[in-house]
Image (cartoon, rainbow, N blue to C red; front, side, top):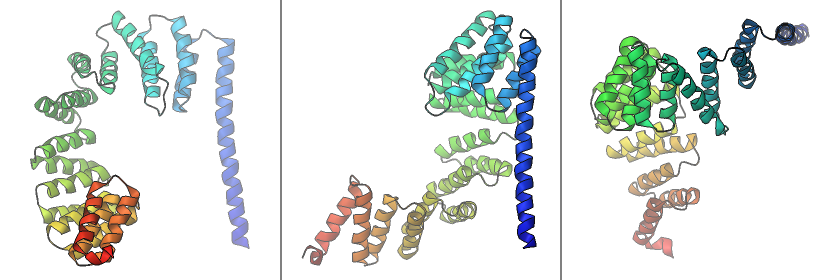
Length: 340
């Protein structure tokens, strides 16, 4: 009984604390807005409310005040950059209004007309161009930003993306390496380098994946990529070890289980492979490729009924999956009793 009373008191205290926090937030914004009403041309107060709203992800409210600030100081490029940055952030949201990237570009072009050497505007324009696959334009703006300030790891990373998208792999690799030279803890740059060398079947991929994992040991994508790399170069034991590490972090990584099944099929361990494919199916019940592959294993092991069941299930999930349809047809033709 006493425990229940204590729990009830704690809940009440928690609710009361949360209510007081919300009340304080409301008081803060009301007080700030009241000051602005009394002094509507005070840029410091307006900027304070902009920053407050941004801290609460009230982007539209922040933009409203930024437009007021520009009315008060039409030549202030920082205000214009802040609007451009926030329109760009809005453009990345799901089902974003199509006007946001246009507005972003308009503000950035205005800034660069007034000051072509604006470092952040060149960087953001480069990122905008990259987002909309204007890779040559992106490279131009990013290189301009880096010419003005070389020590921008994110600019080097984005430049690497742009080069990667136009298949200038050497330039992409150099850009990613420059990002790391400036910021040795830049995980995304290590991942990109790992992927670049992965595509070349170069063992340096493992080095860069491991560097990324030193920063974030539980990064699922990197753990998976590392395992796939070993698999792609037929280093089965290392691949098995890498998938084991992956599944310690994410026990229900369906693709990881599926790939283990593939490895065990290559090693002719079909009974083990069926378990791997079962794990993949448990992790993702709609994994029709896993049903098909498990069917292959069961057929190889002589379990014809289970093989037929798995092929049928794969086709139920994806009626256009030709591999399963062909396997089922062949299985039936080889086992006449299933046609009776």
